[in-house]
Amino acid sequence: MTYLLVASGILYLAEPSLHSYGDSLWYAFVTATTVGYGDLVATTILGRIICVTLTLYGLIFFGCLSGVIVNYYSELNKK
Image (cartoon, rainbow, N blue to C red; front, top):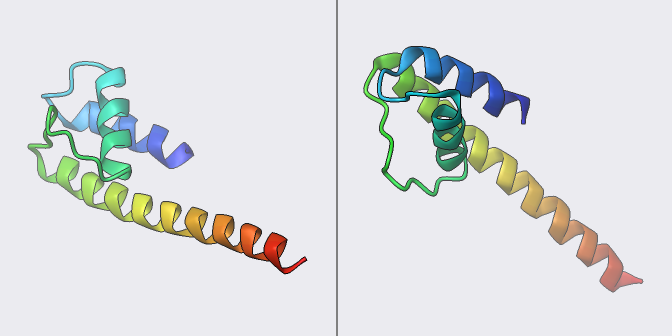
């Protein structure tokens, strides 16, 4: 969560197409969850690098979260 907030701040400063911190937070969330609506686009090199790291962060985070949930229910079924 902290990473999304920090990345949003950097995106807000680096991307001229993001007019508010709310826009940058929305963009970071959409990128991290790999939804990718396409309503906002990174145009600078720094913005694109942050988007790649946000995507990787989202894949790792949601992959780990899925593993924890599956493990929890697997342990419940064993009992």
